[in-house]
Length: 253
Image (cartoon, rainbow, N blue to C red):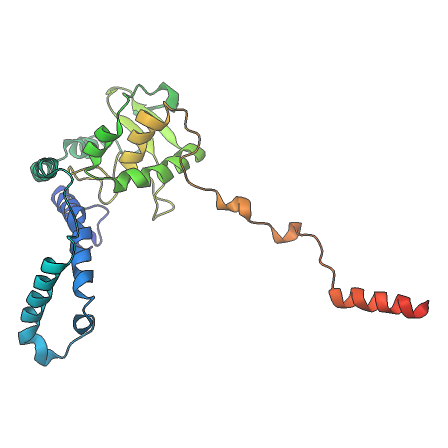
């Protein structure tokens, strides 16, 4: 996105706006795909058709609205309205934790932090519904399982701040940049208030749910168990040579 070109992270407002867009992106893209199901509109049209394209799209949309099933049906309309209201309200807020971290340089060095084990972290248990209220959706919750698997298997660091015990610092590997590590959370979308990014979600999900359930695997399949190393494979026998040897032995007899 152009909002963070040459920047490490989007601003609070840009990150919030991005989340508002991605929340309804599926319906918008599905509507565009439905329009392109009409062969006339699934290709590039000559420029002399520009004055008429708007009318064609109106006709196609009217046909779709009349005869096709809705792309999305509200299970509970009141809950959807409440969720949209919460997201709009959150989009105007500023993340104060980011300013506190940057002003006190808490994302640099380890002098202010004390290493601890995840078993020593006093974190409340949350239900799936409570987790979804933090993420405003299920996408981050789905990603959190793979992040948590890496967190459990990798060389993660859990830290409490020595003076402010409410601050928790956890390093976790990025999906996109192998050498990038995040501080709760400095990823490109981590400054938003509308929901939380997958990094934060994975830590909260693990500390509030998976850890208490004694989960050792988070559903990420280890496909390496189905692979064999070439240097461990048994030597193959050339069938043509074996046939020649057997024929020769018959002739000698």
